[in-house]
Length: 484
Image 1 (tube, rainbow, N blue to C red):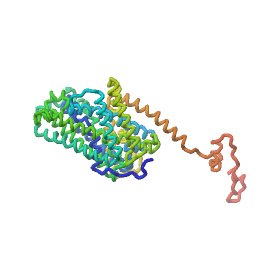
Image 2: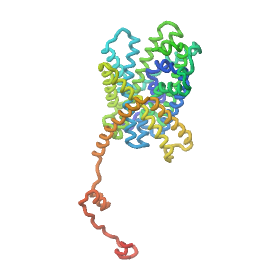
Image 3: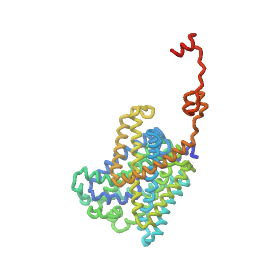
């Protein structure tokens, strides 16, 4: 059974750390090298994307004011468009979380190799990856207080060194290292779009506070604040960090770098200790991200199970955490991790990771569309008229940002992600059939007393009885009353 009165254990700092920690994963440590081939136009792309991400964060804040329940995008989609849209949102989000958790665990292994070189056994790598999954899962099972504590500590431990490198890099900044503005040689818009396609998923996680709104104290105020503060905090690290790396590592070297932040530290201070420092920060960053994303992997099915759209076991909560969802999500991520290390081919794993790039966009589109729906449907009790124009602009920008996410995913991601999304339709059909079978049907006897025609429709063999006719009030005969 789910908690009838959920415990509000996440304050504003914890909710902000949840958003920031989920946005900043392991990808930040390779990001400058990933966008270096496009030139410094990628910095402009970052700025444009930040505007879209902040707008989407504000949309989630407005939606949480309307409905501060756990489930975030699922709750909003279901309220606006019904059960089926809500299910698609929950299914897509759930898929994205546990598949991406497996990818994060595998990424952690690469950084552990830097900290502890010398082993190349697949068995050891698998053990490290599974440990990276189950340690945060145990923190989740211990309750939301532990989740919050781990999230704050890990966010601080990864934010401080990244911000230090970013700020220190400004003092060693050399404009000659930047390289050309648009290395592609085409139009500026084309270069901007190409760089944006790489950067788009850097902001996945803006919905984290709304997804756990049921555990946030004063969610009507704090979800929106945490979403914006967490997104802006991540954007500061992204933008300043990338700018500093661009200015401290020569462009020709950065394009081929496998550890751009480490190269930046070595360029600033000399030596080779930068690699160890950044690898340690990366491991902390990934574990912190897994701590938050494992919770997210349980929140979407919890909200859907509460409404009968997922199996009822997902609605089980202990100490504020959907424990069954945590266990199932971590077990599925573990299974994918085992497949990655034992199949002998990365094809299956890469395909599933590709699916997540599309799956992440479905809940965003539906949530932004829900806000537009609420604003334009005339339901004034659910929006503030004084903020109508501003909220509509934010919702449209958020929708455009989400649509850009879909376009940036690429044809293969959209194709395969759509197939996986439609596979969830069978789950919805089974759950809908089960709900219909357990729902009590109408009583034909009660229907016959209320309306003889309803009884005949319920049972074709039933013969309606003539209803007694009341005497006309003006004294006219029954025949005259019938004719009239």
